[in-house]
Amino acid sequence: MHTSESQWNPDEIIDTQKLQVFALKEFMLQLGYEIMKSSVNGNWHFHSNQYSNRGRSKISVGHAISLYNGNSVRCVFGRPPHKLSIFSFDDYSIAKAKAARILKSIKLQYCRQTKQILCQDHRVQFIVESYSRLFLHNKYL
Image (cartoon, rainbow, N blue to C red; front, top):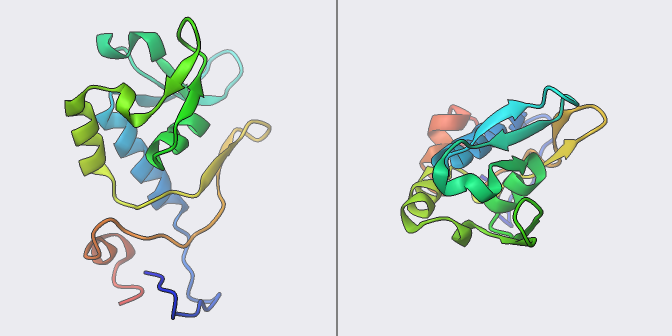
């Protein structure tokens, strides 16, 4: 875990992309979404068949990252376009999604050209400090 006093040694930094993607998938799963690949263009997105998500059955990976980080995003799936935030969901889904969060924020982005999720920063902060032992295998302890 990174603190303001600590210094990062490039040899000790581990790849946390899989951990960040896992955290995003678990968060979206609690909101009722699964990651899918489009058969038309091959882009990845989150899709839901739940009745409660009928106005927003398809959410891009970029919007999902913004939802995880607590940012409101512009939703183009409804009529008329409206703001989509974590509070656009029912209270139970919000509670489940917040409880499923492993990291305070994720630093990912989706590249449409390569159709891959890229990691911008491998430094992560956990919601609960003891999670670092579970997910990083005592690397920084």
